[in-house]
Length: 176
Ligand SMILES: [Zn+2]
Image (cartoon, rainbow, N blue to C red):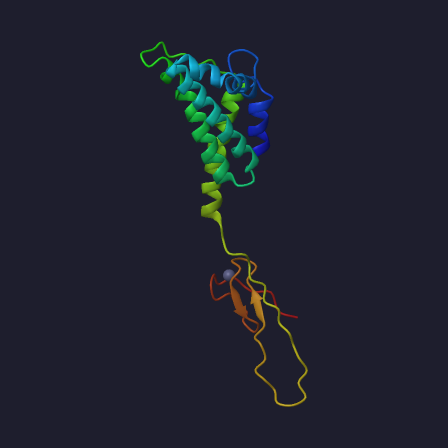
């Protein structure tokens, strides 16, 4: 997931031209002081937006193993880029030239966020494995741990001597 985001911003055409997001942002970083001294605040705000969005997307790519982080950072970064033309042209025309990388980064961010929510809901405690240790006691006999038969139909535990599942009523395999 993270690798796809990184690929989308470093390898794929992001803007209208064939330049990648990195290709768009790196001259912005270089020219930042020049733009700053020119006093073009709209352009400066736009450049800052893209640079911060770029940084967020790089972090999103790096933390890709955590879908929640990648999804949130990715979406914030992409939202910033998407609204950036409003900063330079608040009264329109609204133009944002986009390439493959732009859409892939958006889709991956949304997918990562949805996947993280889905994972969180599906999360179940790990199956508890019960090891039954039978000891040969020579002295006083302690209570023998009960051996359970797992129902093949519903998975409920039943006493070893039971023939029918107490939960679903299906016949249990005969313990050997
Ligand atoms: Zn059952």
